[in-house]
Amino acid sequence: MNSLPVAEGAADAVVERFAGSRGHVQDFPGFVSMEVLKSAEEDEVLVVTRWRDREAFDAWVGSAEFSKAHARGGTEGLLRGHPKMSSYEVAVQRGAEA
Image 1 (tube, rainbow, N blue to C red):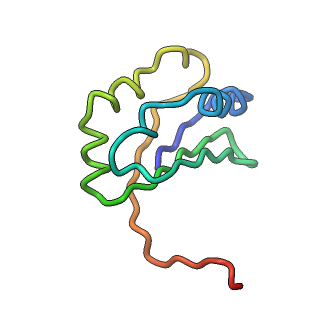
Image 2 (cartoon, one colour):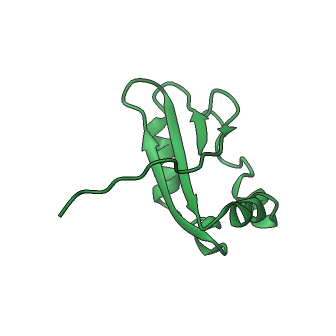
C-alpha cells in the first residue's frame, strides 16, 4: 500500500492521474490488481496493489519499471510530502455469501 499525502484540494487530480493512464505495473509478472482509494476525511490517497506473492512484489520494487512509474514528473503541487509505502499480508478474508 502506498499512502500519498496530497495537497489540499488535489486528491481528485491525483486520482485522475491513475485513472487516465495505464501504468507499468499492470503488465509486470505477478501483478494481480490495483485499487486507488480517496479519503473522505483528509487529503490522502491510498494506492493498494495485490500481488501473486512477496517475491513478485519485491521484483517489482527492484525493477526499472518501478523506477519509471515512481519518477515524480508532473506531480508538482499535488503532493504535500513524501509517499509512505507499507506492506501487509492478508490475515483474514471474507466474501459475500451466496
